[in-house]
Length: 462
Image (tube, rainbow, N blue to C red; front, side):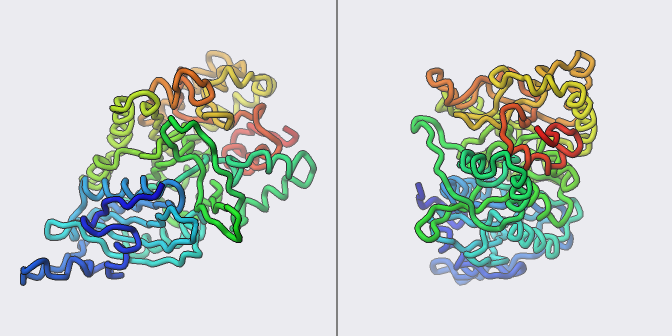
């Protein structure tokens, strides 16, 4: 799938080559930009570093996997759409581990900016190939560097571009039967699942098979590698991701699949003010990066609602039509999530039997094929036996929490194979786990999440 795309350096092609032509300094122009062009004897003026920093955006591109080409294209589109000048108070940084090879690849933290009418790039950090992007230690190292070297008065934004599987424990999405059978229902599975939460090692990698005529999606969080002749992937659990963040963020933006769950939002509620994510999958081409750059860095404050609207409108009217017209998006105000938890706790406690008796096929799904762990939050409550007063209260707190939400009428739906996609009739903006269609292994992991602690959805013995 790997192709050499047009980079932000024009004629320079390939990630590795581009990186070797930069200077690891925040204050100096890239070496390529300092070299004279053609017969010109003029030396470009060195860029100025801003006196003060307003907003910093870090694109965390964990792309050592099948998304390498699409993620590289996204970064190119971002740079070509809009970039701040070198002395602008808004800063763009990108952590890049982008390689379709299964051999460990080096990764870099880069600053992109405009200088003398051209796009410049400075390499700030070079990380060892042995450090997976999908590891809490790597995420923490990169964010800590950003925090220490780019003190932002306005705030920090984190855009995560990769595969992902929502709150699911790492490895489970692609190999659920392995974990369910391994841990079973014995009394030891709880401790074993806790041990896996902190395990920095790889998990077995299983390629997800999908109909070839459907658009590809971002479906499994990973650094995909081959070690000792075996395919493995490094992934991060939600708790690991949250604990790796060393400072408070203005927003977190997930350009990856299935992150739009209430579990994700609540786990990150104290780490950031706002979140952009999708309850369903995200097509591999991702969000609209050409317009995104101006939305996030072109003004004094990021226009997150505009980013969401551009994404929805692009796919809702996608020129290819059909399954390409697939998108769900939600922008969350984390300050109002506690009210959602309190309301849901009452519903879950009052209607335990009703939740356990739900018929899964009657609930709005956000998954394709048989990856049945993502259902609509409001629809679960509505089918649990909750009364109209309870549902009205839930609707009110959801409206107070969600700044923007939108969805296409269908998602990866071809009209012939019902498992390939689904129709969207109910959209609360959040997905949620449905315990009666889960497993003992998932229940054990779910009980470790902040959302379950606050609401008691999954009780011991479920």
